[in-house]
Amino acid sequence: MARMTVRLPDSLHEVLSSRAEAEGVSMNQFVVYALSQVAALDSLRRQTEQFEALRNRESEQDAEAALKEILAERG
Image (cartoon, rainbow, N blue to C red):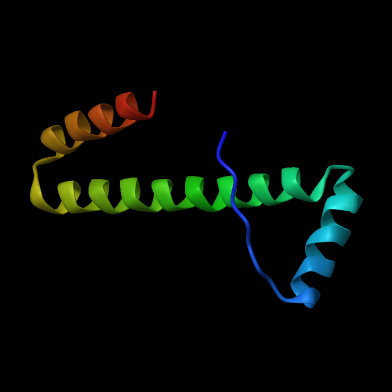
């Protein structure tokens, strides 16, 4: 597992610490969860853009096939 040291403002540290405490997890767990959510949303955004580009470029049948391929990659 990788380690990362991050410098952040005291105010942000306080917010993260409070949120982690409210969730009943360590601040490390909370930050990993939050970053995971951002990564997942970014992946979903890219896939949506790819699908829309295909939909605008290809026939409906080809777009359906491309969608199935994208969904298969998500596993």
